[in-house]
Amino acid sequence: MTKPYSDDLRERVVAAMQSGASCRSVAAQFGVAPSSVVKWTQRSAQTGSVSPAQMGGYRRPILEPHRDWLLKQAQSRPHITLAMLQEMLARRGIAVSHDTVWRFLRGCGFSFKKRQWSPMSVNVPM
Image (cartoon, rainbow, N blue to C red; front, side):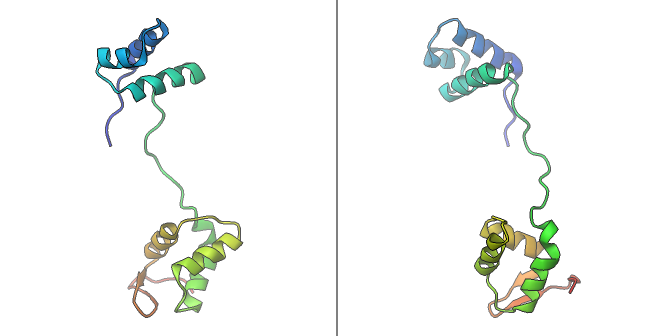
């Protein structure tokens, strides 16, 4: 991922916008995209700062609290599909994507076989 522009540049761009220059002329003057000029100006007006928001960071696993239930479902029904698991989770009030379910199960040691789910060499709690 790219590094954000410096706060110094952002402040000069916002100051040029506040002096009455047009968005496109400010963008050309500082060599940035017009969309950046608009976003930085909006950010300055809303928050009082032109600093970028945090990039990256840790995201807690959304399915971890439901680990035991989810593994029980996957192990008790060898032909269950990811879509079925996703639907069952939705009925429990957990809205996740198909990929989220797959990444969670793969992290628990499951691999996809054409005929059924099967645990890899990792010990999966029953």
